[in-house]
Length: 261
Ligand SMILES: Nc1ncnc2c1ncn2[C@@H]1O[C@H](COP(=O)(O)OP(=O)(O)OP(=O)(O)O)[C@@H](O)[C@H]1O
Ligand SMILES: [Mg+2]
Image (cartoon, helix red, strand yellow):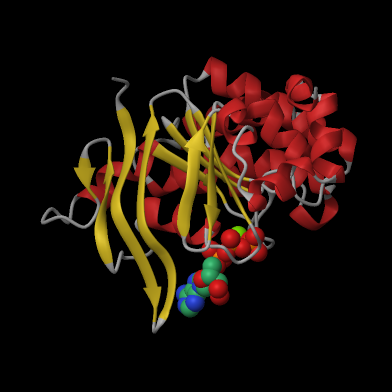
């Protein structure tokens, strides 16, 4: 059986008397791109936050690289710091810092690299995401939405993580920029041997990238499987999500055309 980089076992999330997740079991295998879908407010971002150790489960546990996030060892968060990167749904960059300083931030926090090395690493990361060196001194407000996403991705990858979390990576991008961002994620996933957990409501992004898809509905995971397996499920939420107008368009355009026969 494939190695699980992330494992959630019987996980519940609760805010006051509001139950967001109920008995979630989910394993993410090394090297896959796991997409998480569900309605707005269904708890997708909160599930990512559980995987990052930013929320505490009301019940159940989360294991990352085989270690319990909320076990007895408080050193785990420090050990995980350079093994994972995150592209958050909101506030992709610090608006008061230049492009260079945004990407340099996680490298400086290590406190072990000299200025020259930090400079070289930042420029290499910017090149990797297709940002020209002349943009390094700009402020985020001077950039397009597509560039901001790319730079935020460069920052997420600054410490060369094995595990990458993406929360709505293509939201707010026009179709061309969205497509080129998807291509970038696909290339980096392959070149850097990343394991990716991605939240998206964009079906084009979902079809283009997912190894497996997990569907969150009414506090539970309805199904976890390949796109074939998910689309074949007759649940009304899934039919509505994948077989509505937008879904049919994405499946026709992408590799999912066979589902519409
Ligand atoms: N810190 C918190 N305190 C109280 N309630 C919270 C907190 N964080 C999230 N919630 C609630 O948990 C539920 C799930 O929120 P979450 O942001 O995970 O949804 P989502 O699926 O990411 O939605 P969207 O698609 O709009 O991004 C919502 O009802 C939200 O109000
Ligand atoms: Mg969200």
